[in-house]
Image (cartoon, rainbow, N blue to C red):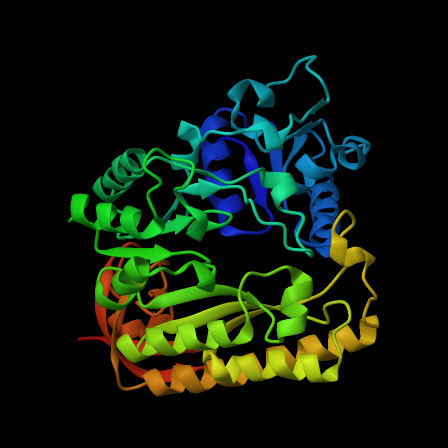
Length: 417
């Protein structure tokens, strides 16, 4: 082996953090790092399962647990016999914390006291073609279902100059696509001098890194897409026509009880305006099924949102109460009903996705090849694989103009133009 084995749970931000830790532990062949997720109780259960499985497979290795679940509730992980040490979300970027020795078994500081970003926020990347650059961390909002602010701390932004320098370096290394990531990306800037916005950051990246072919944004809050960012999304060809929106529900009362900042009409109108200006934009969205107090009419409003917002990439989450959140104390929907509503949302989302992929057959997309089998994603983030006779020489990282000739399952098939 070469370096620590890293097991990543959860989001893209965790994936970027894991790559940073990979660089920090390049000489630690005896180490397994489990980068945990706390978004749901199920995520925590899966983290514990991954720890046990990893230790069973390599009993001689030291297991270190970090990430949001470790930050929020470290003691249960420290009590696991498989675990050598528990690190918080700040400590996981300290190279000394991974070394064997007599340091404290639990090293978790107060994440809410962190007010600044650090150079590690710009070192994470993943895959061989697409790089993730963290521009923001933490969250100042307190959605009633979400525990993540207590794992990541308050919102803090990376200065634009550092972001630009990092992206320049990644482009020089051969990365063709950069994804800007964060816990709440659209809250970028108020903590920096001059209070720059996400739109201004994107403008600066595109202006100062002209060699960057493709820029993509991670999850956005629709209510925070201001006029400047709207104009860039709809008018800049190097910004990919794919948005993932944090919608969560399609019913106004449920949105209020979630403490979200948008309502149903605002979400629908934002998507309509975006697609009127740039019709090829593909919309992804997070939706929670069976939020506490949700009745059938409320659930139906979320179901209808898939068509009304043209959601072609739905991420559906059945609600599970997360200890420490206000939603966990609200009247719960029966688990069987939650499961059934999640299934309905997934089925509707799948139908919409299939129809969208079928509509792309016969069109062209520029494919970013991500794997040796000639597969990757187009500008719209549609999954594409080159026909075997067309994939020769298409190495990971290549941008290939592709004519889409068919659909196999959820994968578009293409040929080079």
